[in-house]
Image (cartoon, rainbow over all chains, first blue to last red):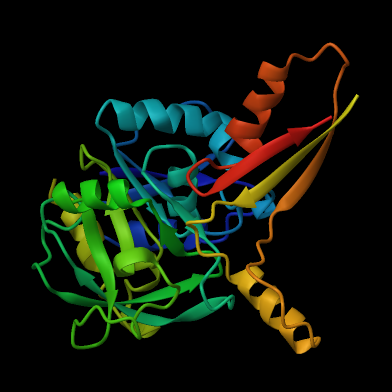
Length: 227
Length: 75
C-alpha cells in the first residue's frame, strides 16, 4: 500500500509519517508537495501535522486552497483513504471533508504529552483491527485542538457512529479531567459519513516504535494495511 | 476602496481568550465587564467596483469559518 504524505510549507510531522510508514511491512510512503496536482500511483493520503502556511488566519485555512488539496478532495470523493493528523485534521475540517472545526484549547496552553484515547468504533478502515473500548496511549501536541461542532452535527456524528476516538483516562473513562483541550464530548477523532476520511488530533505516527514510549499508534496503520 | 471585515467567534463557541481578557479586566478593578469575545479585523483594498457579493464570498469562504465564526462588513 503506497501512502502519499502531503507536504505544505510549515508541515513538520511529514518526515515522522514517512518514516513510520516505511518501517511497516506492506507499506511504503513518499512526500507529495503542496503544488503538485497528482496522486497517481498512491493508495492512500496522509495529511500530516505541523503549521501549514504558518497557521495564518486560522489553522488549515490557507492549506484548503492549495493545489494538492483540490486533488485530495476528489480522491476522497471517489472513496480514497485520507488520514489527517493534528494540523491535517484541522485542514480536513477547513476543507469541508470533515464536519466541525478545531479551536483554541480551553486552557489556552499548548498541550504536549502522552494521552489516553479510547476506540469508540471499529467500524472503519482506520480502526478495524482495534477492539471497541481499547485504550491507546498516543502523544498529543497542539494549541488548537478543541473540537467544536453544533448540537445537530454532534447528534449526527453519534447517530452515524462517526466518532472513532475519544480522550479518556488510563482506565478508559471519558471524564472532563481527561479532556486535554475542552473538545465537545471528549472527541479526539472523527470520520466522514462514508468512513473513508479520518481526522484526529493525537499523533499515531509518534507511537509506532517502542523506543518512543508507545507502539499503540500501529493499530491505525495496521488497520489500513488490512484493507 | 477600503473594506473592513470583522470576524468574531459565534456566541455558542468557547472563547477562552475572551474569557481570559474578561478576567484580566476584573483584575484591573473594573467589575462591570460582561462577556468579552476576541476576533480579528481584516482590512481589504479593493477596486471601487467590487460587488458586495464578491466581498461576502471572500469573507465567508476564506476570512471566516462559518462553523465557528460570524463576520460583518463595513466600507
